[in-house]
Length: 356
Image (cartoon, rainbow, N blue to C red; front, side, top):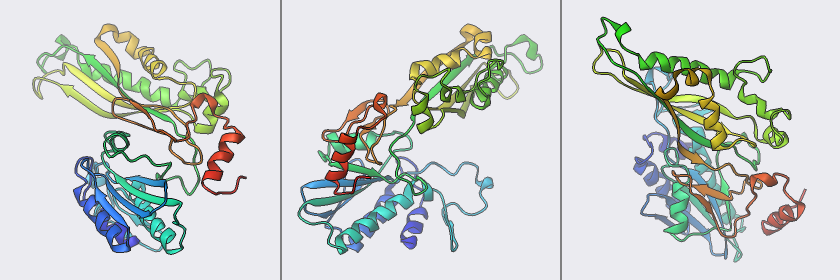
């Protein structure tokens, strides 16, 4: 398994460039004896074990983010490293090791005779997740016409069974300025300086506490019953966060004042927050209000906030925030965080697990 993992990591596999990862996983599935192995037109690699009517899918995305600043790495991100306790490399945790585990889990199930005429296991390595959350499963559902009874995600959870996740949205802030020659910067209006003020406020929004004396009340306030009537559910999922992930600018030259600047914010949402409330939060930051009509704040993409039951995925989202409600999946809307014993027992019975 470790050799399999390191073989995948050895090749770059950023979104839309996962071909080497697909080929490595496909070859391993064939090697360990999957009954059927195929790659769909979108590039998702799939392996099937068993012949039963109940299809259980084990999902793991096989694309990775880039390596960022190479100088920050203490080892080659693709050659990786391995010692008695750890394996290092780009994508090992998110999420290639989960896919490797799923491939061998399916083999073990078959070897132990667990896949009888009732169950069929599908292990899928999905593509483009980092750039297009959920687009792969929208394709599998609509185009491949594959509709599992349950999907188990292999995202890293520190060994726990997770039944919830925060929502995610991308927020873009654009700031207008006026360019002029760099020798007389006072004649212009530097968009980068204006953005710097805004980013200080964004950092405060993430880092500050929720005391009333605080000019910018931090996102931790959503865990406080004073500010959020769904605070119990918010504490279950965890507080929201926001961080600047990318920055862009325009300037006529390196010897001129920048006439525009934009940033992309990665915003993670908890219970009680909506995409509208998150946008308004940014619009109400002191620096944003200070620069008025020179600033625009928009949502560029969004993943719906939803719950999962015992790590069974109940939805998938596309780049445009399309909410795909998959037939026969267990749906648990966020407003019903307290999962009823009836639903829980039904899920567990269908998986032939003990209810605890």
